[in-house]
Image 1: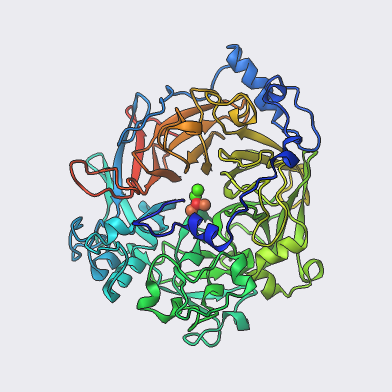
Image 2: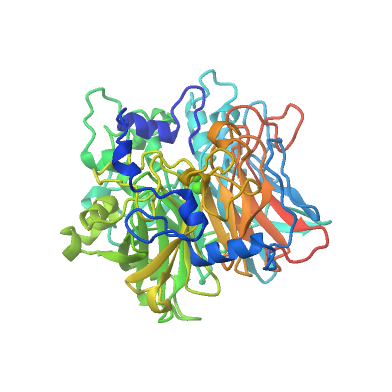
Length: 633
Ligand code: FEO
Ligand code: CA
Ligand code: CA
């Protein structure tokens, strides 16, 4: 996200302020590492330092498809890029809104009020703002969805406030309630999907919901606050970005830019180094400290240590307490892709979405047992961080007291510093990770990184352009994939290649044109959401530059594409409305409906989606299906 609301700083700008970029770029230093696009277009990319390591299937079949020699598995007509203020899907497909910000979950809640943005009390009973990751649950015919509400659009949430900021204690209450997770029962009535109002499953989890701290960080002195002197119970979750789902029926919500909510009430406040590494600033963008001392770094210096985790929620038990799983580390979590290794260990892949930060893997201490008591498998285990070598090999480096010189609790709380100590590879902003459903192959979006080859990460780790992150000032992003040795997700070694380098072949004829499976009909920038369907096709969602000009000319609004891992073919399936991102995905049990998030339409004030007319724009979950009712994924 890179939004700027009413002159306030977006998260990206905030980070820039904390550590401004040097003005001089050492371009020469890294330029020699680039190979020409022609090299990999012909399939002749050298494998070595700085060379692009493109997938062999991508190259071979990309050419075969171009020559008409292979049959596509992407059975829909390509959608053209556009800048319309609506959703565009292929012929034969349709979409409808399932839930929008402010929709009441209960019949005693007031209807959505676009003129005021509602109140604290109404928002606590309504669907949250900026929906993102999501999962679908079904039990005995009851269909329940858990959906993240990542952050908020102050212009629409507080439209009557001149500054667009929470201004009164009730504004803060409303803002906190618009964050978190919405759990809703859903059903299809008269052919239309909607929220089942007053369902006992309907529940809001917000920035004030109590949850247990579990794992190595529980009770540690860095977790102790005046409200919670034992360091065992955190209040709330916010900036919930991507998600995960467990085979034992729980939802994982991932705390991403938790840092942007804290401020300091004293001008001479000295920011500790550990907080600098996590992007904390004295000028967070939400004003929450006005009504809650937890958000004042001067008054509650340990509060930020209680955020940046994976939170496990049982959506089918409305009385259950969410659990923060500190064993999965503290960073700006994107999603949590969970798979079960052949020997039964739970393996979770985790991205840290910040320029020059890392990609992680968690392996549970105990094994998953079908029908067993699996509830606390995420409480204990070992974290690993990825090191990618330039020769298309890689390895997972364990983060333990032995390898880091830190205690288990310190590794759980200061995970970024632990990963720096073992020499992990600085990445181009790891976003969603997706595991192939039919084989041991994992994909991760590296969304973009303007700092690649320009400056180190916040821990001082170098960010040379090479290997898996091959381009300096990378504004387009790429998708990396890897295969663990012996098909074993617990193996420490893996092989990797790039599934696609995004770019613009209409503007560039060098590395920034992208890989050979990208062309003027399917080009995009900033891959973010990734999700495999049951057929092993990869749905790719973008959260990037939608200006449609200069280096992004011809790419239109943010979009969703489908990729075939076997052939490398990529085709655009959907274009979102103005100034939105497309993110999150889930299917109903019969897989005749696909749900996705349309987040922050009109974040700069130029959309009336989805209600049209002069209405305020509203983040919404949409349901996509085929006109003929067939399976969609
Ligand atoms: Fe919330 Fe990295 O996207
Ligand atoms: Ca994202
Ligand atoms: Ca993103």
